[in-house]
Image: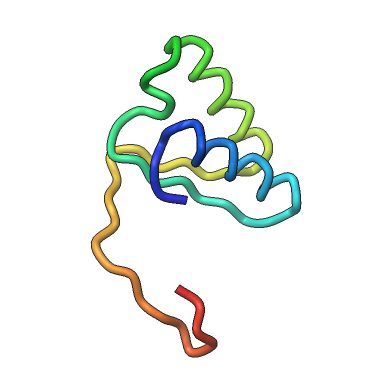
Amino acid sequence: MVGGGYIAIECAGFLAGLGKKVHILNRSTFLRSMDSDMAEKIVEHLQEEGVITHTQASVKQVTLTEDGRK
């Protein structure tokens, strides 16, 4: 996932719940429009569920694999 708003966080949560390996990349802090304590708890919970978070990150390139995935 790219982004740190509530939609990216929500998608990361349900994909992790389905057993998918999930990484979230964000340029700054996650859920920055929310209360910072609550946002921190939500991100900690996602990490406990196996979601790997990356802050201060940006996408430089997207490539296709041999099977057509990005």
